[in-house]
Length: 263
Figure 1 (cartoon, rainbow, N blue to C red):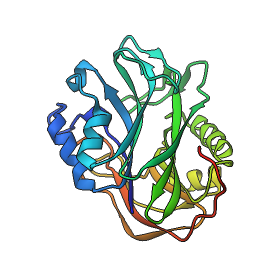
Figure 2 (cartoon, helix red, strand yellow):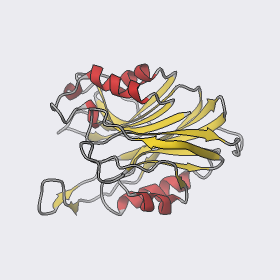
Figure 3 (cartoon, rainbow, N blue to C red):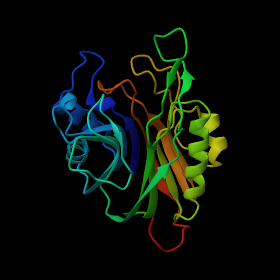
């Protein structure tokens, strides 16, 4: 089966600065992923043509199940925090998980966010700027695949150095009770060594993903725990959308080692 993660920058292309829903759908379709985690996902936002990008991605991938988790309500400039459990009927922004396989259970985990501003050097700026992090969450799904049951966890961690490690450790602890094998997909805003150290899980795909025009580092990851084996080299194509490249890898389950229950 093929799993992938993709920070989509709400579907915007760096080439022309526009959101083209058909172009975004084609980018998702070209990945041919059975399971796809998405970050920076818009729903009903003017900047992305009021589209429900989760549904667009699910249709393009031929997915039978999908879940959008809002981390922010409203529109840019008027954001308000949202609990990961909420599915508001208003404009929202967050993460998503889509699957071609049936989902036996879902779980949303809210991750801790810094309550104060911190100095961060942003691209294009010489000096640090006081920055406040946005709310973060993870969504987990227990999938019924042809090879057996598989738990998939999707997330988007903080860009604040150090705090993303705190969040990842918290997520790893919260995931201990989930059935194995398990796959973690997402933009972790961390390098490979830090991601492996924080979780104790194995790296399943190694390829530079950011920035998309000429990737120099990997901050998007596929980590695995349990009886699961990567097959062949990963894919990190230029999708024509976003400042990240998607990261995809084929996996095989060696047998389900987890217990009963759902996320």
